[in-house]
Image 1 (cartoon, rainbow, N blue to C red):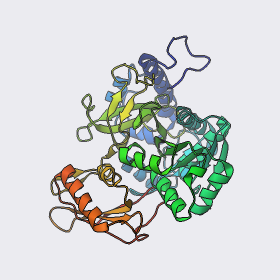
Image 2 (image 1 turned 180 degrees about the vertical axis):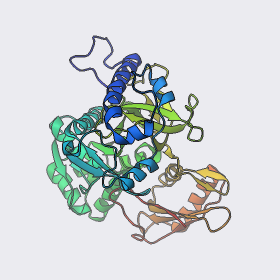
Image 3 (image 1 turned 60 degrees about the vertical axis):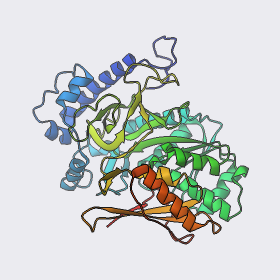
Length: 441
């Protein structure tokens, strides 16, 4: 819930108060349950005899009564009821959109939407754009191929509805995309953090100066890099004059957050579309105040294919909002400090030390000589071992010295010896969508 519309109650504050946000969430939750409980076969079976017929009195009461929804349940349901599962609230004929997850952590999930649910998610993406300062005068370049992943299509259609000139980059080489960005005078670039770095690498190879672009905003998603300080700094160095603006979402739920306009690395939850919770991933109870925990989401407006108390697997930490006080930007929406801190299932224990991929990237991106990297985790021994390969940004880099300095940085950060070795330029894979830099054996 962001800015007030023309029908909003009078208030000297530009944004809804915490009380108003919670009141609206409870109203939407009641409407959602009134539609879903009688009609959605998946939740009819899951909720069983739970008392959800009467209106829920509070959001806390809903959390006490309603069980979690897990991804493996969704996968099993899709396998049992192919091809779309039993999660649909309405007859199949009402659905007009089909997308699916990447399948990087298992079986791809197919997700259907009606025009109404689709528009609700476009409204959320418009909040992302507004917070990033995007206006109808902007020209947005989408540097990815338009496959079955939902974020691409939502971002494109939301931009068009705002009134922006939307420039699709599907089917083009990286060099052609750079030329198109320059030729069209694109002012906003949408891609993953990895691919923004890759485009800068291509620009250097082709002697294309990124100073010649008009790009002022780079909206990144798909990876946590946009909220990792050293990765953000690297991107802003490579793209002179551009601000990096982070955002995250999921096919299962839609657009979830947008970056705070005044505090880089802080993500506000789009609470007009979600009831969010943060829980201890081990106990399932509410996380202690100020503690990191797993983000749980209930979709309030995606009625056609809803999720109730969905365990996203994302580790987050509330920064502000839960105490009723506004963020420095004036918003009362809950904020996540440092964005997505990691994934519950991504943590690696290396010789007794807990390590998240984002922490490794934070160290590596502090070294401007690192062009690309790959992390290898070996479970052959009783204790897992980690080693890292780095590819220098150019041939002039002293790779031995770089490796030694990186090993020292990892020793300082983790009290752990991490072997680092250099590889030839071009030896490591490049990525257009989500990077797959962690290999396990």
